[in-house]
Image (cartoon, rainbow, N blue to C red; front, side, top):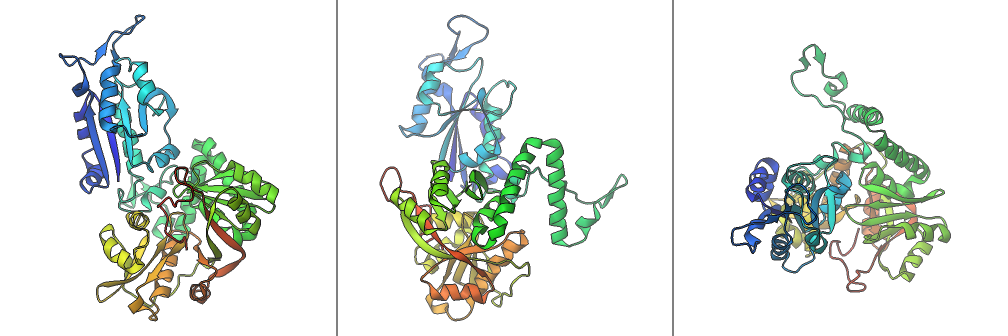
Length: 475
């Protein structure tokens, strides 16, 4: 859950503006929390005054430092909480920033009024100055609500459909395609025939082309970034079996290009904090690693020398894996029929099946709609899902249910879900798990030639300690 603390002179404006529709439901379901804080309650002035004339003269009034500082201190309780001051002078708010902020557990948004806030208070409490556009509002409340809406909808469980946030404007640096609903003909204008065809692949291709054309004409800056990613994906496609994680990260719009060195590249998966590095030489590897973001949590590399290089830098090897991918477009057979997407309330049963594997990670994946369960007579007997970075995994079958084909049905089911979205399913299996390796071949997945390594970057506070967001084993 993420909590938004809003420091404001008009708390009722925040409360009323965010208590309806999707965000209102998310608050009721305790997926997010909104805490409007009245700055006036913290003034030392007996008349409740929070403003005064600015030194040096000038029009208007200025909010005083003391009530703002004390309100912030009361909310933060001495903790370091990221604090955003909404101001036209700030950095431009964008989807990438919203994705970054959605990872926080708490955020404080400070709303100014009048001619602004005494600079001394800002110096004490603000970590980020953020603007929603080059225009001036009467106060910061509307801007704060815009930012809360944009951030909250990225929190797992808020939209209810894990795919919704990925199929809209700005996804993959492309603007959203045109959409239509009933009636089929309105004012002489027909819905495009392809949308009535029922052919999902044709519809997907039509939408992609429409998004490209719309972006090219309306947002050439975004289209340039899209083309850069496409060029890199084309270069990587010559070695698809080995480079599928980087390709899928870019194709699904979940990653950004960190750096390119000839035919090599590093791609950063924002949501999970994974940096995927393709390097053909130690020199190229060192160059690419030096460009990886400071917030990187884990690395996925495909060469022995890269794994050794990261170990020398203090990273801990988590797993030595074989990589598999499913390249056909034909859905797999799923003999076991009692499979469905698991909900957050299924967590206790899921933990029982998984033997208590990393509760917080499984809970996050459940809220993202990325875990599926197999049932027998109403009892959960196995699960499989999609990892935060996009790979297949989390395949567990209860001990008393093994040998009945449940594991293969679960993995086939998840593969089919990925195929429906136009993705290429792939995953990693520890090199010493013979049964799991055999299952991949049985299902028709191809094995990459390289051996792959997962390594974790040590946490700054306690060297070598796991950050807790990850399962004990990434496969």
